[in-house]
Image 1 (spheres, rainbow, N blue to C red):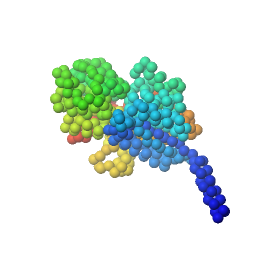
Image 2: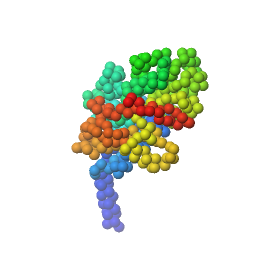
Image 3: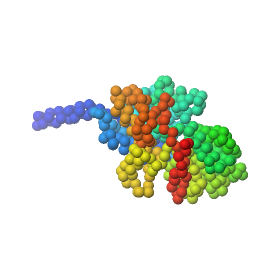
Image 4: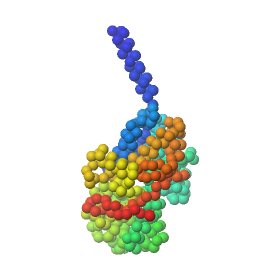
Length: 399
């Protein structure tokens, strides 16, 4: 009996030792998983999981561990500064974490970037578009330096920025014959920033700006504001903001009051939740949505392979498509895994160095590189509308 007990203990000790010796590399994503953004971010997480599965969950002898973190709260129904700070600090303290995929909202990255920079942890955003996070001279005077307390670059993104998107949006409006515009924003970093770019470009190309206002994203309706807009008689209303900041309600009130024939929004509304919030009848044929990339059914090469594999894996119907940012979640993880494979040392410093050296990456978004600011060299933009309650691609913008 004693011999049997000793043997069992030795086996248990052996298993414990083997477990302790298992080498892991941990990836975290921090995205809003509570609230209406969840439909969009669920497809992004699906993309991340697909990328890891394609690597068989391994980098050499290391096992990849993935944790899907929520940076939203039930109280806000949207990303929450306190929660994003908790996520960033937790990741910074956990030495096994070597990659942070996020955030979805530019304002959230403003909080986590300095924390992760001090920790030497690479951060790759699949969705942030506010240019001040990376580009000097495009935001506040202290940006982006304030996000890099060590003076070193650790933040990268795979999506084109709003200094491009706001410009092509205004140019698209001009092409549609718009001569007078009314501009709204949600007063957040992303929404106000892209509205600023749109306004500047509109004035440059001769579109008259009739008014500019920041809205209360929690308002029950915008009937008084819409009455004011209708009196100004704009050809188009532009809203810089997200679905989560009431873009659907604005669209609904504008349509009900017949205040304008055209309503344009940026990529923060390029999700099915926007159409659902507005009501399809209120946006069919009148809403115009810009997006920093191409819809899934317009992707080619490895992008088309991603779309086909995604639809098969998640049992989408033939007429169904992944949300627009699904491929960006996939691409952010793929480029991180590529760097982990190339890294000379499988630690934060080695993997950060390898990400910064990414050039001519052949991925689902084409062949692209990270530039000196950490931005993608991919500049593809698209214009979309809504027909029969679904997004419909109109044209490539900026070309």
